[in-house]
Image (cartoon, rainbow, N blue to C red; front, side, top):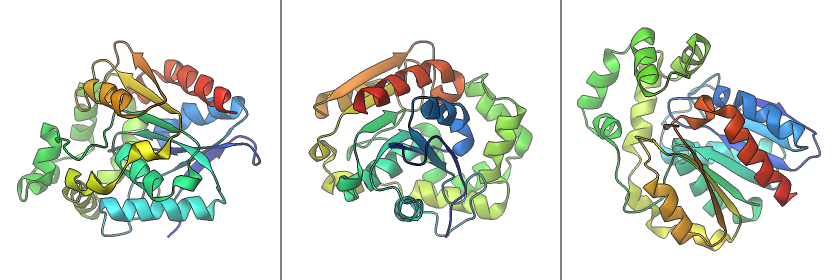
Length: 259
């Protein structure tokens, strides 16, 4: 199955692979792809299966998303890259990175975790609970979805909400989302050793992240040897939508040091 994607920058440039979170799509990287291209890198940002303009590829599990990301990487001819990951994109992208270490030059992690003893936030626990998750999503329409996003951040305009709503717009997509969350047992990470990658790591975090608190970034700092933490003051969870210029500055500075 081919994933939809957006791309910018020189075809022969070093590659940044941008992996979005839930409930977003590659649209969240619209400003980053241009900034990365201006820095001389090739930016490649897929819509994960069932999100944005990518078709569903059931079951919508964590494992299936990791497999689809690897298929996309091979299809696009990317030999080595820097994964840039947010939210669920971190869980998917870091698991992919551990399974394909030779393809990873560095890591950029934001607003996510990768810890076997991790705990889900309240909304995720609801989605993971049988019947409760179905009821939570069944009553959701586009306007209600927009209201939920705007309660977290004023950065979401109508265009962004329309783009992100694609991932929950019908029963099949909602079932796919529930499968993703219900496959997200953190115990599955017990066999993964992120530190063994031994690559530079940039952490980009909002200091008011209500879904992935800043404590997670500090834990990455403790557990990974070569890390740089950039805290975006006044930002919540959706930092790439909220503060694209500040995030782009941190990201491109990191990429240019790697080149």
